[in-house]
Image 1 (cartoon, rainbow, N blue to C red):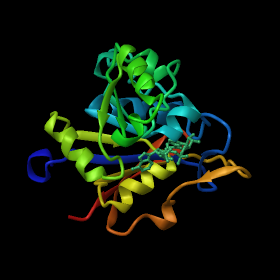
Image 2: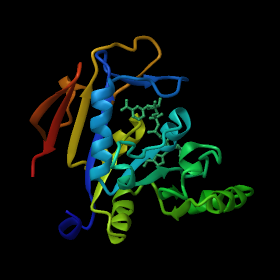
Image 3: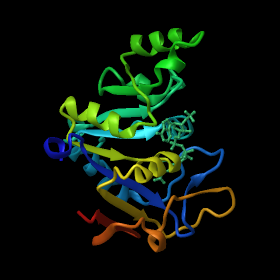
Image 4: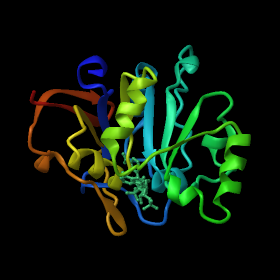
Length: 222
Ligand SMILES: NC(=O)c1ccc[n+]([C@@H]2O[C@H](COP(=O)([O-])OP(=O)(O)OC[C@H]3O[C@@H](n4cnc5c(N)ncnc54)[C@H](OP(=O)(O)O)[C@@H]3O)[C@@H](O)[C@H]2O)c1
């Protein structure tokens, strides 16, 4: 993919509840799947070059996005955050671990040169975060830039807006949909799609069971 299309292979991974939600408004990380599925996600991270989330997820969930399986800890992917205005908190797990596992923040050049934001950028860089300035609405350009750094595989781990942007830009090659048996109910953040509304152009290739959860794998028709 990197050589032919000059971009990494993109996997969109989402965990969705039985009522089609990926999280809860105003509440951080919500457990949708069980330990077996989460372990599989860590194996997926170990197999991929880079992992990407939007700033909404980085702030709401404070994820680390590393691989924390025994013997695979040194195979964590590069972590990338779409963060136009450099809002990633300095005390977030991503920033605090940036010296051990690289973190790249995708920022908007216009936004970062506004008053005060230069200082935030400097603080992030001092903490070991790399700031890559580019127009994050041009995801195709971003992927080309990542490919030119040798990144061949990218897992997009959400949230909803980021998933939609990648799908709308036609830049998703594979969807891994983890389905948990529980419901989230009121206050839920709707998944951009569910098993009944898989985006056009994707076909199911396999299904795996992880404990009480199901993972459906869809690939894009070439
Ligand atoms: N179940 C799951 O699999 C899963 C996975 C991850 C997250 N989540 C949940 O999802 C929620 C967060 O989702 P979210 O939709 O609010 O936020 P998000 O997708 O994580 O982040 C969206 C923000 O990223 C920035 N951004 C910059 N460039 C973008 C681009 N090209 N496309 C989209 N966004 C871009 C935008 O911020 P500005 O507009 O400020 O520039 C946008 O508001 C959390 O509650 C989290 O728990 C669930």
